[in-house]
Amino acid sequence: HKISLGGMRDEADLRGYGFTYEGSKPGAIVQGLIKMGVMNGMIIMDEADKTEKFAISTLLEILDPEQNHLFHDKYTMTTVDIDLSNCHFILTANTI
Image (cartoon, rainbow, N blue to C red; front, side, top):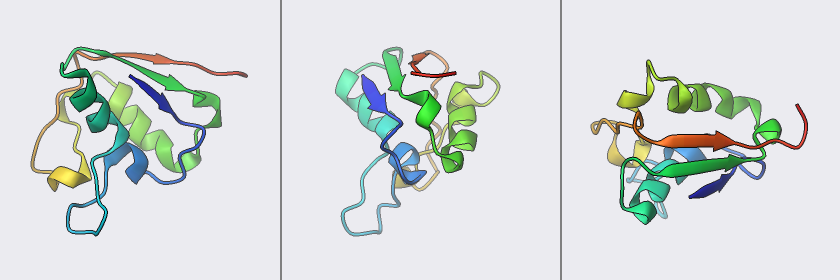
């Protein structure tokens, strides 16, 4: 599953929107897991060099093995622990 980080303007694009908001939906990570149908799939995060500052802490939570077994998407009201520790993440960048 591919996620373009370059076009994201809000942390909710990765972490989801609270389900009480009209038009709310899960974030790109959970949407990718649903689309792949597995919890150990490969997620490509494109344009990591264009990541906005707001997303750095969320990316750390997703990629850090000490934290990524307890990822929370706001759509699930942060009551569901999502274990990302078996996912494979590839980040691409045009410049470093």
